[in-house]
Image 1: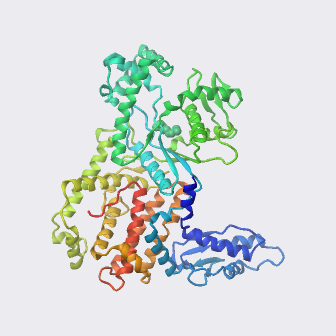
Image 2: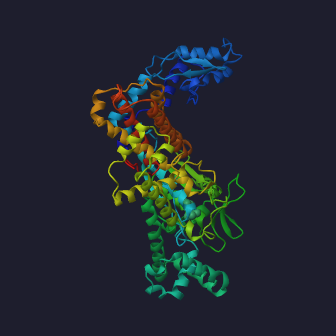
Image 3: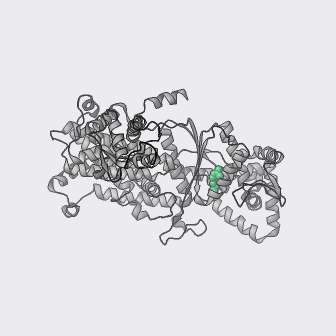
Length: 617
Ligand code: ARG
């Protein structure tokens, strides 16, 4: 952890944090008796400068009526501005707006310098330092023998982006797949296998690999046949008490499920440690007994529950039949993660429907002292909305047609992109290019850029990156709490806020850089960046705001902060490239560096979103 902190020392604070530090000095010196944290935010209207400091109004309110108090908020604002220490980052004396907003314009040379030093030192210096050494992200976590569908995809995609962001910031991150591998479904599955396959000892993993079929069949028997139901219930007990044959069959079912899940993770380039509910099984009984003895858990209608003063529902930790459930496991899991794994930040990514459950778990954890009062870890439940079909209805496993199976959706996304890439790389008629509103020079450029044809392998790879990237991006760009409609055509659209647009934007910058034909690292050694044209300035400002974008992402764990940022970055680059000549211009070196910086930041964003950047499409 010393290494992590040392690495953090090399990090550059965000522009916002830097500016806030300057204002903190001013506030302390102008109003030492009214301590207040600086309130600094980027503006979204250049009329109000690049950033605004909003402390004056509140400070005025606090001092009002006291002896020698300022007469109006603008007096407070002026006093703050007067007290600002000399700073390279602020361009000119800030102006005031409205009742006392302080508008700050950044020095363009300072922005350019900051970008330049990132080019020299690498994007790692722009990772915001986080006050956690070790984090756990609990995500994906499907249930064994049930199929993963588009709904499960959300947890996998959102969790992966959060994990990638933590890793980028140097946090040791455990990616845990809290698979539902210990539920009551195993009783009926095992009994059914025993009846219909080669018995409990003779059945191979292979033979249980059609888990959906197995699940459907056994569920039908469970619902229709009381005898079978009783046997299934008994089988759960036999399994949980560790009977050899039962355990082995259970293992085989898990293996088959695991193969299926990991085939998808591999496609999606997601790493996950399989640590299912069963992992915590040995800890359940002692924990429940301890909580009972200490009076944390109470008996209620034969069950054992933990009451919370503000919650209507208690957390059930032992059912009236003596069995342990989802909540019991989550209590043991919480304990293991805090006290054995020493996690300082624990993040659970599930549908919003489970927020009540997690409230109870976290509340019970506090009540039981599992979450310590002193230096408690940060714990978040990251909830997300539903995935809806085109008609706006919830997609459910049971009414899913073949076509909405996850694997097939991914295949389809990839195929759509393959067609699209082929088309774009293939014969483009002049009519077609004209329809895109390109001029003669751009048409020529485009033909040149297309360069060597793709090999079949390259095509496959690009199509997969684009197709899977499109699905990921379309998920991540939504506010995670809202439901969204799953629409493949929209996801792979060439224009708008999509992965396809972003990948093309990145490849385009890469080709511009290639076209200049200089070694960017060499250029960076001698040349500086100069931001003069308004389009250069706007692009430069957006580039240096990368760090605070990530800071914001970590506040509410909202990946759409990253997509919004990178989309705006691509748009600003597009304006820049339309208005500013790069290759062969007088500012070639400076602009080349600006292009490269844009590409680096864009690549980092794409990487955080789990999308591999393409250099040529
Ligand atoms: N298996 C659960 C489900 O599919 C999600 C588990 C989430 N993690 C946890 N620690 N409860 O609903």
